[in-house]
Amino acid sequence: MARPSDSEASWSHQLHAENTSKTREFIENLFAKKVDWDHAFPEALADGLVWITNGSSPISGRYESKQDYVDRVLKPMHAVVEKIPPPTVKHLFVDGLWAVVHWRGEGVKALNGSSYEQDYCWLLRTNGQPNNQIVEIISWFDPAKLSDALEGTGVTFPGAQSKIE
Image (cartoon, one colour):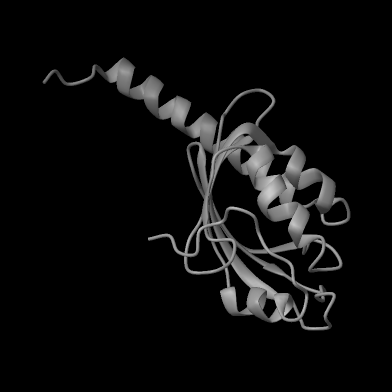
């Protein structure tokens, strides 16, 4: 296997550094939009989004598009919580087109009165285009908080799997 030339390696490193910088700026700007999070976050998702929610919860599963995720998770969640929790970023790590965001949703109650404050960890991949969007999310959260919020509501999440490994 041929080794890349110094100029190829330098170009690759420069492109990676540029992607890292663009991704960081995009994610930081997005997560700073706390007041408009309910609108800004869905707008940042690419139509061809792939979203995997890990674990065993009513929303665990694989969603194959932005519309799939909106229909099967975001719309039903509006019948569970007063608003989608705005983020407070605790940690952000970015490498190229990928970012790991550890964030906390605070100040949100479920409509049944239970607290919906919790930490989330999302592994995000952006498309790196001038109009940057999120094309992939792999997420983790506290399923017990969701179970508490769902208690007594009768809300279901259509087509979600019960377990992803």
